[in-house]
Image 1 (tube, rainbow, N blue to C red):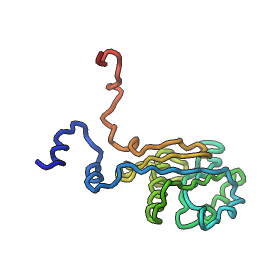
Image 2: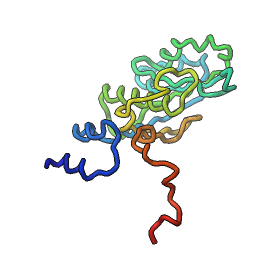
Image 3: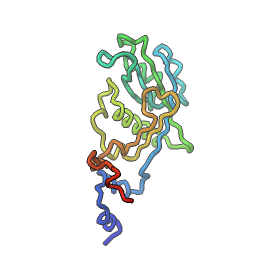
Image 4: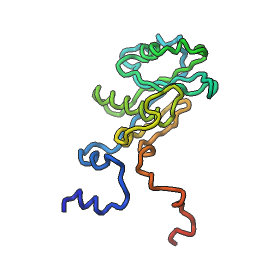
Length: 195
């Protein structure tokens, strides 16, 4: 019996789809993504976010929504190949009836080591998907209902500084089927603990 078959036979708990594929490819099971947020900024100040060296990453848009009220998270987006100023100005937020009260928060990725352009772009993409899925902003239409487990499984996002309404920490494991087998019926009480 080969090593992987022996491991599969021993495990009693189900693993999420793609778990052994990721393990077999020897890719890291976790990717920590650190995002440092700054804001708020106003739409009329977007021209200050056009630095070609640093004004890339993720952004949050807050404003009025007819159902949810004032100053709510409306949208999460990414500025990957365009600066924040270029990307956000293309989305038409100036046409929002409450455009003078729109607030923008920009997030830049941080790492203790340098990463390739491709890896940086992949981190931006993965972080955007998990942030949208976990927060469900009112105007985002993609990544709000489901995500492929392989997309979120390996990610662990840390939101730092002016994160506004975002969760400080988001684990991709939380949004996979890995814990579907756990229910309220399994709550530990003093009656079912060992002495």
